[in-house]
Length: 465
Image 1 (tube, rainbow, N blue to C red):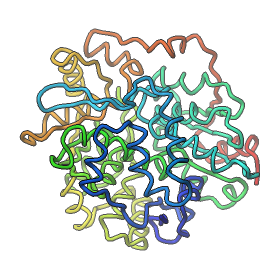
Image 2 (cartoon, rainbow, N blue to C red):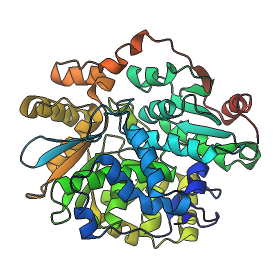
Image 3 (cartoon, one colour):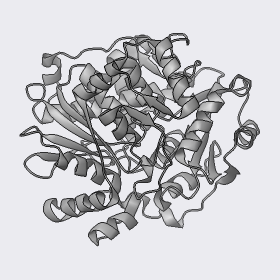
Image 4 (cartoon, rainbow, N blue to C red):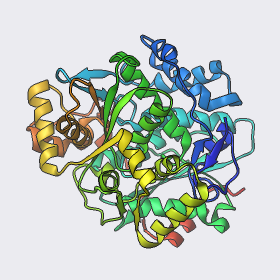
């Protein structure tokens, strides 16, 4: 299995190389050169398997010859052994048509753990026995940072620099990052910044040859292919338990950066019968506008009670545009250059029509988000966080007949206890395993959101090549 850049000018890489590289050298994102297929018989064989065995079956074609299935299983066993639920990502029924896929049973209580616990182990495996010192740079709107820090804290050969917009993540999200005091973890709070600003700085560092040439850079954001690959697994895990492949299943995905829902697109390309992928956004609705009208135009980020979705530039959308546009790297590079210059872009007819075949979208405001939280609590006995509520609200507004709709529950409600309490009158408690979070010491540095300030900070602490 080889991987190619969406912008067509970077060298093709194998799985190990693409995992360590993160962003492609031409500024693009890596995708497999072909989509592997799972037959109906192979999918039926997933029924009743453990999450670990499902993960091995789904991911092995992407890993290729970089490791054996036995080696991959060993890593998955270690990664998912830290989850608090034996099913890893259990399904919960809400009513006759709606289900929740709980993705928050990992160590930092968010869906990012499903991928990053494995990615941390992959980094360690690929660095063992080498002299490479990896400088991992990430931007977070809340959950990626804590999940990456948990997965990489204390690991040899890795220095982690995590950027977050100061004051725009929840207290729990911030403390899950800033209370990890391992010497290889560096938390950076960007003054007056949005997640988009932080993400732009990360991309700029990868694309600046003077800076990137001094260090071995890698990424933990969903620009890293290995993260998306790991997220494909739970679409298969859920779908076969609800009747796939004989029965199509729909998924509603609360999303800002398009990574989690793109993993569903990958599952569909592999043969999983997905009736519809619902792209559920909050009022920061660039993805809803793009999918419904073809208008991919950057707006101003509006802070909301669902901060992980307060995004107006969705990095992974580039992967979809590339695949739907005939995998023409030169054309996609020109399209993205136009967007980066003007902050506006129209999807081509092929891209818009291709998206419409699988995706629908919806924009959920704060009132509808709160209504969904109250409905889940009162009618189904489930307490859900604001992001999951946006997915559920979108799912309940779409009529797909008797097709089961699975809403991805992306975070534990206690990570956003203020918003949950406002909507339901009930304040969720943190699980016992992190119950002392607010008693722990915090450590982070505040910096201006400028390229010079951030790169100077990293250069003073990272290990040069």
